[in-house]
Image 1 (tube, helix red, strand yellow):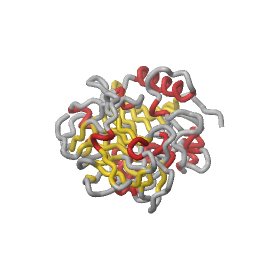
Image 2 (cartoon, one colour; image 1 turned 180 degrees about the vertical axis):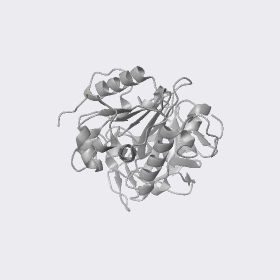
Image 3 (cartoon, helix red, strand yellow; image 1 turned 120 degrees about the vertical axis):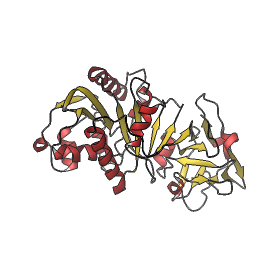
Image 4 (cartoon, rainbow, N blue to C red; image 1 turned 45 degrees about the horizontal axis):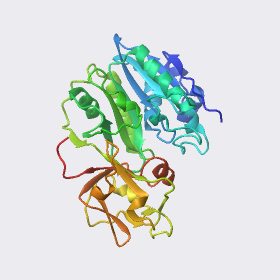
Length: 343
């Protein structure tokens, strides 16, 4: 399938014009689409993006469900559904991105020369055109787990956006070319990880949060619940050519074997006595954990004992996946020092 890097705009869609079924709705869009819905206050606009990854559907389902209500938003709404082709490529909702196409949420910095980069550039141009007062980028976690938010800039406005959805915020200094890296004092931008894409509570959280975001007069006046902050996560990654598998027994010649239930570690504090998985012949050399400055901290946080991988200090894990494709192309999981409290 040829990748569609054109971003069409559908202005003022009526609820009666929107297909009844979610899959039919995606077919109706056909490709990357920005929906613009005029608000009661036409002087302001709020933006939301979703389906940057074709296997993360809660945000797009929430937009479809909300459009069918016919409710007018408090301010103009710019709702962008991006990787429609990827989502519809059989088997449905199984591909993070298409083969030979870059991960779209790694494309929001120059150069913008390949198809995914050109689509990212068109979205950035659209945001500059509409000048929204805020942007939420809605995702699902790579494995099962509770919802949380991520931002690269911390102030009261960013925390208020997170409070729409929950009470956990990761403040990251990693720069990967993600859309949320646009966030600053003048343009509050956050990522919302709604939980696993196959969990009904993730779809419900996405819908209730979207409804609040679009129908509330002021989204920057939220004070409850209190936010739990986690600073400067690192990513545990495989080195090039290393492999991972998920099994209840160690697999020879595999760099890391993790449990099929590894995603149960999400948002738990991992102690130093619990093995993360079995290491292969290269031991820790098959893994890296780079901080925001690019320094590999693998030996600072992890240790090999009896050919198994352990944490050297208590860690809190996020985005633990059991999908080997995601683990290989992106990362095994994110983590923070569970005992660190300062930025």
